[in-house]
Image (cartoon, rainbow, N blue to C red; front, side, top):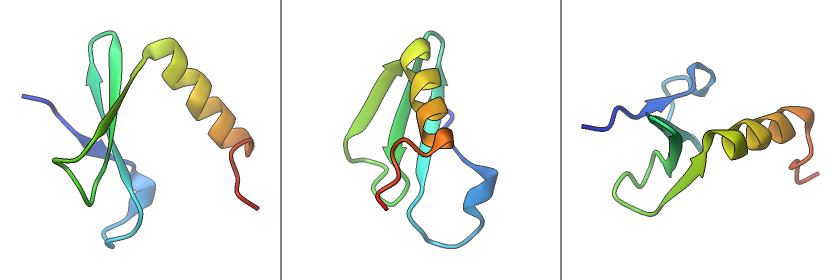
Length: 62
């Protein structure tokens, strides 16, 4: 069974959230509003790079 989790920053509201699951050497990502929809799977190196870029604001849409 895959253990999906949401960020603690997501709160309890039905906002735009993603969920992640650790799959040994991979990280899976999905839309919390569409749990049976498409999933993105990244190796751990790519996951860490993505989260680093997001935190630094590289992917802001402003």
